[in-house]
Length: 153
Image (cartoon, rainbow, N blue to C red):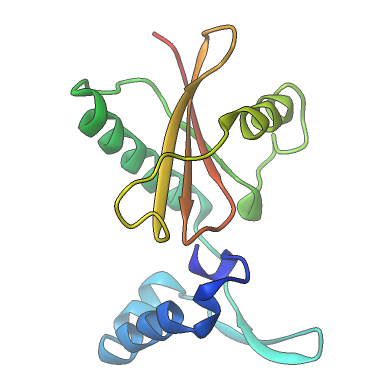
């Protein structure tokens, strides 16, 4: 998620340097989080590439959403949580009404409430206009929003 963060005060490399130091002190983390890390070139610049275990990523974000829901509401969220994040797309990414719901959500979310460490992590809750879906929007390092969606029970 840090690698997808926009140009901002994080450009100083402070957070990326922190991640890299973690990898230096614990090299096994590179293999755990980026098992297929390889050299690459992008727009003429030397860089690295790796693939992400999308199912694992979505599953972990779903667990984070369930934990936040319990923290904020005191109620266990037992519905299946579907996760969408543009950089990882999926088979439904370009389909309607899936795409329409995400676009509607972004247009109507407004500002995320101020929370402690908001530059690092933000989240907010909404319910769809027809009251059939609950939606959580998460942002890490002011990056692209991650959406978690579940059916209203």
